[in-house]
Image 1: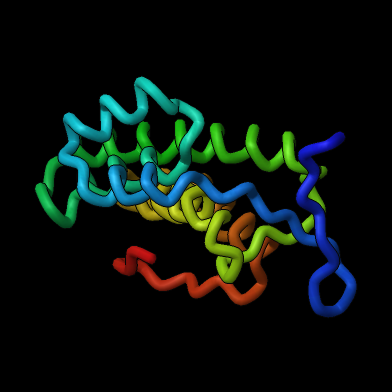
Image 2: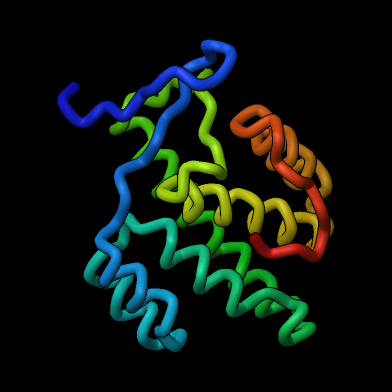
Length: 150
């Protein structure tokens, strides 16, 4: 596969590094309103960075609403699945690391961590636990701290 981004990490365990999105697109995502993010996602639905940003905007710490928490959960879940697709396209086979230290992996990891937090918020303890375990499998240095948004 020509687009594979599998590298050896310290200790020899392979890691996957997603290709970096265009920096101009990342700047648009960072500055966008929720409606602006919807426009960006209609153009680039495969960008976990945009899904993560939209999920963060809807987190219940901002609105204290179960409906909004479910919306954030849905955004994070879509970004998580889009991120898994991107990882697989880039050589991830389920055992490699996906490290936060590689900036281009952060959108996916934000989605997975957001999914973990929202699962906990809506009382889906099994899903929260699975996401936490997966984060630590992908990046053993992952800081599982509730309330933090990386």
